[in-house]
Length: 374
Ligand code: GDP
Ligand code: MN
Image 1 (cartoon, rainbow, N blue to C red):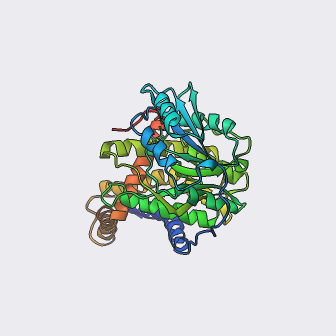
Image 2 (image 1 turned 135 degrees about the horizontal axis):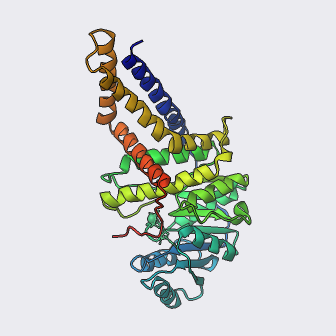
Image 3 (image 1 turned 180 degrees about the vertical axis):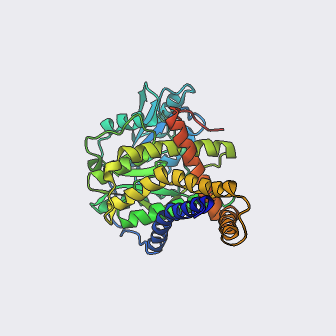
């Protein structure tokens, strides 16, 4: 075999093993997603702590509090907990004043934490919450009035430890197709058992599924950390496809930075919980897929494309025959990937992950408290 042929064969085989596992996992998730059926309703609504971790949210906090106060849920059963980490724009005071004026007869509390970081705020909240169920909401998530009801209905099932909503990107948003694939995967994994990747903007947990454990303040992905903790304790963490919410669009530049920051948190959280992965069917395999996709795939993809490229460089014009064919196949693969929407989405995802890995290896941390609100 010529050198360029060896490089080519290596590239082709590696790209197959890069793309096949996520592809099969995705197809399985898609089949399951269509078989979703909601849980039975009609339970007595539990008392609920609504946790709002906030940092410099003076613009959004009023609307968020009003959204909760106007929610379709008996206010006598709601307790609001705002945890502010050193906001410099008066968020805590604004929240306190608003609650004094508008939350008469409702239990509420505004706590301040000195150290920045959402994970630290969440840990502080875990020490304070005294209801069996709590919901956690980001300031910028926009909910339907029945969101809290949809969240808590799942806890009738004693296996369920955590539930999160589904973020619908607007049709024109740059991450629209990424979002729909992400949701399909998370919903499919929820139906297989439990999803390790969570949507912390709108979620709820059963306190007993978290136990006395805490999440790591060094890892940003508080939501996915909690989901993995729930699963570690023998409960399921799921995404509810009916619980739809939206977020205001961010600019393209912010979008990328935010994706990289989230990817970094997620990669750290998945690695810290790598013992949850197994090859056996079922729950362990879901974690293995997540690990493969977020940790290995970006590198194997880069390696396989590089070796296809190298096979060109080593011998750009092989004598007609086999060589011409291998080069033709490489070009065809590249064109399919670049011209198809799915292909481009896959490449973008891999590049975000690669960037987050490289920054991590260089020791650059992207922290949650660097807000990207415009
Ligand atoms: P994203 O949804 O991951 O892009 O992150 P956001 O910037 O929307 O932050 C999610 C929520 O966590 C918002 O309500 C923020 O105000 C809040 N948050 C971010 N950083 C901190 C922090 O250091 N402390 C606290 N208490 N909340 C934070
Ligand atoms: Mn957010």
